[in-house]
Image (tube, rainbow, N blue to C red; front, side):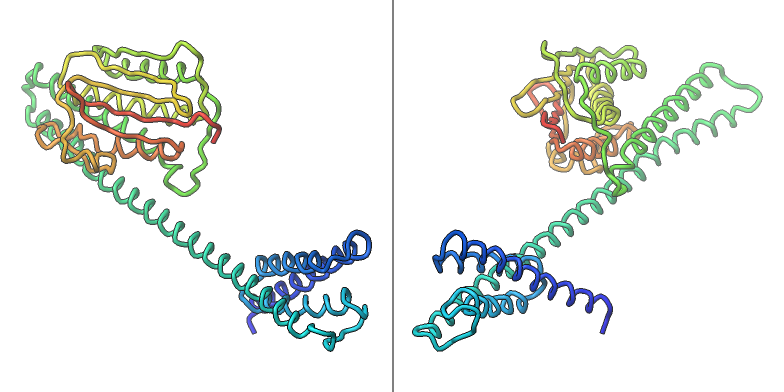
Length: 357
């Protein structure tokens, strides 16, 4: 017989006997020092039987505990005491009723435990499927978003090489600027990937600490303005100090991604708005632009890593991977994220719970 099976059998028998002796000891104290009410005795043993069914595997041990409980009640708590006597008046009927009741209780408890295990297994499968879907979306987004800027860089380098010894300074400056922009965008995407790697590898503990929301927002705005010096961002935050448990670096990355999307995709010169709202259970972050808006037919899948602006010729600035990472980070913080169009553009909204995670 397999060692694991032997170990499990020994464990289940030990648990059964141990719980029954423990129940009997408590019942002795109750019966001889507190109350001789037989109903209390039966209830004590039913609790013991439920415990046996809960901490052992299969139906046998609960039914076995039910049978032993009837023997113990007859021997220790029925006249004549400390002697098994099934000839007492009406005792066979009582025995059968008690055995049936305790067996049904044991079987029901075991069945509920098995159902709980099945539900936990299915939940784990769903979580694994969701993780696999997120990995697939991320890989697809990375493949899509890396290809175009790299092609652009190679094309610019080929153009520079083709100029030979007679370069056109203005054209060279334009090509170098394009290379610089594409390389900067690739570096930003790598930062995104590094930021989210520990969430999607399975070792996904966030480094969460209570952070002042104003400081996180200010740092994000400062960083985005270094990338886009001409961008205008109107920031509105509550007057009170808000503290939220978060991984500040990752939330800053979310704000950076959403602000960058609003600046580069809106097609508008109007300022982007960043509004922080204090709700009873959450803190809400709203990023609003006043431009062309989002494609309605892609709103449902906008955070899957597959979104791209079909009408845009500048495919390298597709939102795909950035929005996928935003969803991953916010979900890991037990928050929610959504996107919608408004009358004059688009709005991204995400929330973080106030309570400590």
